[in-house]
Amino acid sequence: MADRCTVGNVEIIAVVDMIPPAREPSAFFAGVTANQWGPYKEYLENGQVQLYYGAFVVKTKDGTMMVDTGMGPGPHPERGNRTGNLYEVIRPVLLPPDNTRNTNVSPSDEVKFVVHTHLHADHVGWNLRYQGGMPAPTFRRARYILPKADYDYYTTKEMLEKFPHIQKQVMPLRRLRLQEIVEGDYQITGEVSCAPAPGHTPGHQVVMVNSGGQKAMLVGDLLHSPVQVAEPSWCAAVDYDKNQSHRVREQLLGQAEREGWIIAAGHFPPGQQVGKVVSRQGKRRWQPL
Ligand SMILES: [Zn+2]
Image (cartoon, rainbow, N blue to C red; front, top):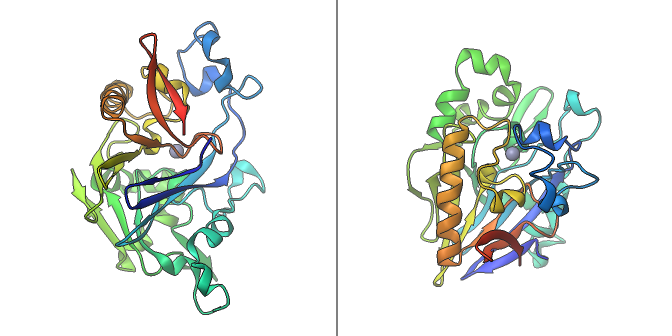
């Protein structure tokens, strides 16, 4: 059971921002029958799919990164008063112990990179904070790295009307000169890169860590539930292109298993976000570290 791990010289720490309402399995994984869930009941909570909205802090010698920023403080009208608390959760993770008495140092100043796997609301929520209607970056010393295909897709006039979180948490980054739009395989530092893994959204990407001979993949929404390690064809109803999502998941899980990568999945339950893909009797399954 682990919410953190080291990969060579890099430390990966999962943080939970918000616990959203549980979903009916048949609604979350459309087309999957109750029978098909038979062997996988352990992945349901009270018979429901329970996601967690989180993010990862990745500490490297070249600076600390956030991979995604959770759902944010809201208000989230559809969820009443259930607001994110990631900002409080990351405080002790980010702040070096010797700085605890220096009130001029904001923990968020430690972050040099914010890397987005994609631009859904539960992954960009803490990018900016609002005071008197004006946006200010939560991570004011960071470069915000966004995948181009998502940026292009979600910033049309039509999409901006449909998804207010883009207007609120993504659009101001440009004016603030904090954003960097990337495409294809992109090396962020010597040890960390992002790689296209489309399907969930047009520009969805994974974040790869390669340090000291070890590899890890932060999967974003390539995986919503550990059940998808055993059943990669099960696609979230919200996936943009389900065939592509399935194909890319199958390919990356296969590679992760063959090469022994550590996998970090932010939607998995607390303590199970970090693990490996293992096979038993020809069937893959999720093995938390
Ligand atoms: Zn998500």
